[in-house]
Image (cartoon, rainbow over all chains, first blue to last red; front, side, top):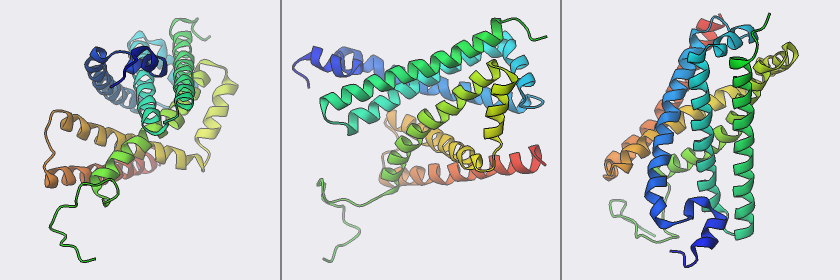
Length: 131
Length: 132
């Protein structure tokens, strides 16, 4: 479609080159499935907790068997939601400058949100146990 | 203008009518956008609050159990199930199946009905079994 791939790449990394598209399409679907499976694990885990107070939740996340899937859940979910929001913006925001701005904001906020979540889990999982 | 409803509509940009498949398509995007913004914000806030102090968790728990927050929780529950079910439908359609008009319409309607039923089931369970 595009005559200048570098211009497309500047607007959307997803459009960087045509032969990446099939890979990207498959990756999006892998991330959908992994997000779904990890959320099933997440909700089942929450139901099995004795209560949802800070003590119960932090004890749960201190266990590597909970912290590791939680970290995967964060990566999978934020990657999936970033891709999804960018697809929506690319369909409805037609002006190149606006589109670039929205994609930038989505990328930055998704990375920031994922970063906050990851550091919080790591703080619980590898930090000193509460007295 | 008299129109035989059994005849297909001419494929034209301005000549169309709403169908369940279109509603599900736009619901998938609306619920996805809602989960990606409101849902993600609540999720990150929760994790940061857990890793923080007793005060940060009390602030989150205070908001989470506030009666009007129930609108957010029920909304997120419905958005989760609608996005999950319409996502599964898209997954089947990605394989090339389910494009026949009646099949397509049937499963589009099913995602809407089941998303509502599952949302009601979850909240009946939470209110009458977990909180009772």
